[in-house]
Each structure stands twice: as structure tokens, then as C-alpha cells.
Length: 146
Image 1: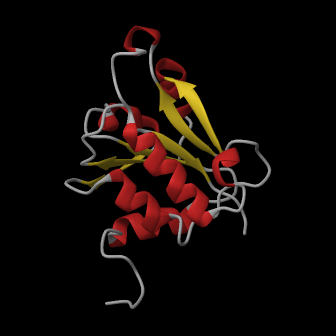
Image 2: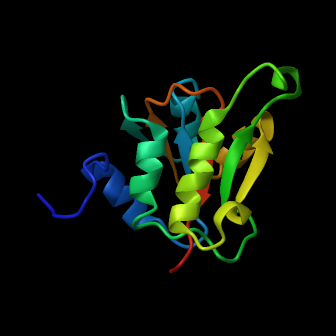
């Protein structure tokens, strides 16, 4: 047992975020995301039953967001066909967590259309499959240095 490590961070997830280097990307996938197929070019880490917001808050205690890019935290944006039909309260939860851990706050957060998100996710170091049930609850973190 280690002290001070949030219980939502499994040994496997801790290993993965420790291995990641500057510029590497981590996908936080909601329960609807095709995590296994998305991770076919990287690795899949499972965190079934755990909310993405709890994982993000725990990860950002140890994981610096990249300072060399404008938007190191990208949220999957709504498809045009879903605009005005689907509510996304998780987005504000994500932004509040980023504000807590990164001095740039909401300025560090960007949005990527769903199918463009899938393309970016193909370049990720790892995909974290969560139990998040919020629609459009996927995000990508890009790791920094400090």
C-alpha cells in the first residue's frame, strides 16, 4: 500500500501514467466509447465502474498538462445532429477539475468533434475505459513536463 494515492488509481494506471512522456496522450473514455478497438494501436487500461471525473481529478494530482500546446485537455464535442438535443453537464465538471489542477483553467480546455476525436485518439499512448455514463464524456489529456 502507498500513502496519498487515490484509491481510484489502479497499479496498472499508475504505471501507465508514469511511463508516459512529454506530449503523450491519454484518452479518458466513457462507457459508450469503443475503447478496446480505439486502443488497438496503444494499450487499454480498464477502470470499470469508476466515474471519469473521479479518475481525472486523481490523475491530475500527478499528471501535468502540456504547457507547449494551447489546449492540452480536449473534450469530445457534440455531433451536429446532437446539438440542442443532448445535455452535457460533465463538461463543466471536467472544466472545474482542470481549473483546480492547472493555472490556465478553462483556457487549457478545447473541444474536438466526435470523428476528429477518434482520429486523435488513434495517436494516444493509452485508452482508459471508465464506467462514466454521461453522454459525450470522453476526453484526451496531453502530458507535459512539470
